[in-house]
Length: 416
Image (cartoon, rainbow, N blue to C red; front, side):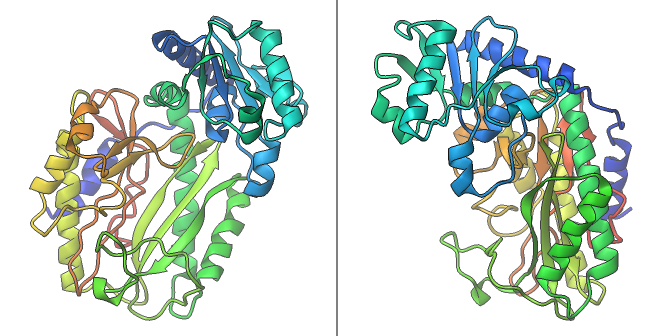
């Protein structure tokens, strides 16, 4: 049995069951995790402005709007230690049905404006009284908040580690949302592959077809600009990167697919506020060459090596060492400016992050636990041949072993 067939069998055997998500239960469990982390960090009040953090804390999904508007219209979440629900401040909160958000609703405070910072100060006073003596966790601070000296006499700490720790392991409902997002993303991409990947097709046409497919699948949010990037065969063909590795993504121009192109694709859509991540390597107008198939087999060996050690109690360092041990080429079998694996959840790339430039000590300190989700994306490169895959569709979550959240059925039919 070759490596590709074996890898397909392993992932298919570990496919997670399809179960519906309970949004209210998911919100309650997330709030419970945040309260537990607040207690662990000795935090009395968590003040959240970063849109994904607000989404996690309140269930209000981040809006897909231009950043120049988003900074002014951003909602704010406030969590008070011991309370049973978060506080959500935003102009459109009243438009969301009560059953969809288990929060205490308040008018917007517009924290980018001086008047908004003053309104936020009054809101905090109403909720907790004076901030003197309280420890406040804050993830972002606007210029207006600094000018107002809103937290000037308060013990302030960074909210990112607190929220990150709560998000690290997913609940059953979160896993269900991620798995469904992945299924819909894959369904759209496999349809595009069958219908549109041919010589003469411009990138914009593929992206438009993908986005047009999403409403048919019940998807109303796209998180990542669709990428269909023809890749050079040699690093020297450019564009250059500071690391000396091949560049991806470049996001330049509207390239037209040509006969024989090797195309890296990358897409991500949202379902119930949770992200997905689909990555594959497609070959245009021909079958892979023997050299390309050989690279793919080597990629499968790297993937198999990682999956062999991926279980609770293993560290991110263990995954990196397994990938390197299974690889017979130069360097490490992933892009040096990305990672061997990354998490996915409210954001398309979040902790756990494996194989980053944070170094071996960081990887060895990150211990895998049940509920963590990993997007595995090893890269096997041979200059002059190309790369067999940037396979971001292979989402696994850690349980007693692993279960697979993405499809394995397209192995061999697409290049991977």
